[in-house]
Length: 171
Image (cartoon, rainbow, N blue to C red):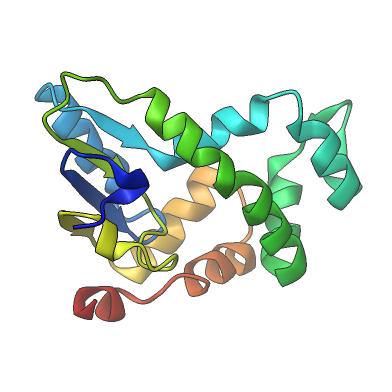
């Protein structure tokens, strides 16, 4: 098997749609002493690195306020503009491998990887096992609006940008 980043240890993916409960599942595993690496946390860390602000200023200056990234504006614009979304992904995603590998230790027998876009990025062949966390679309919508303080329109665009659960189940 060709595992993610050519690692020699089994990797169990935790995935699902936005606001479907992946973090809750990850927290359960962590509370049981399991190692869980979270893609969203790594992305947040990358956003805090010094090279990110100048990059965001270049591609989306309207999302910068007082030398800080306004994530509500950046998210809204990225889901309205495919070119911007691709530029962001092309900047962020290559950095994830380094952050992921930094969290691995020689003592790890296996790793849980909370990765929301596992199916969207066609990465399923790199995982030994995949846990798909699902929620009703109306619940997802309410959770995204409340959690991210965004409009219903933006929340719907985010949800619609992801593969439907029925398709993920088949893959």
